[in-house]
Structure formats: C-alpha cells, structure tokens
Image (cartoon, rainbow, N blue to C red):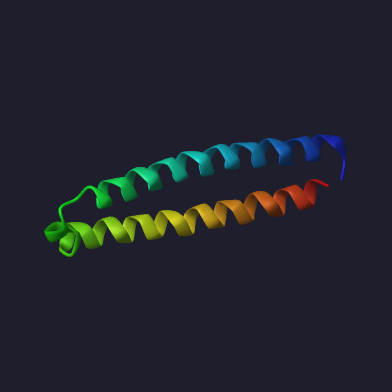
Length: 76
C-alpha cells in the first residue's frame, strides 16, 4: 500500500474514532436519562425505548470500533 492510501485510511480511521467518541457520549447521556427516570417510568414505554436506544448505540459503538481496528490493520 502506498503512503497516499495509507494516510487516507488513517484519516478515515481518525474520523470514525471521533464519531465513536461522540456516540459513546450520547449513549452515556441516554443511560443517565434512564437512571434518573422514576422507577414507574423505567418499566414503561419510555423506559423501554430508552433502554433500546442505549442498546442500539452500544451496538453501533462496537461496530465503529471494529471498523477502526480493521482500517488500522489495513494501513499497517
């Protein structure tokens, strides 16, 4: 792999890493929202939606982490 493509991969990897950090922050906010919700709401529709959103964001964080790792392997 030439330096131009390697640098492009490293740039994309850095962008994905930044997006992953933003997503982790949003996930933490959603988890905090759920934790501060009254127990009566946690078991209801709002609580379930919040938990589902947190779970989906966690899956997305894992996917971005895998993508970053794959790009780093490709660039090395």
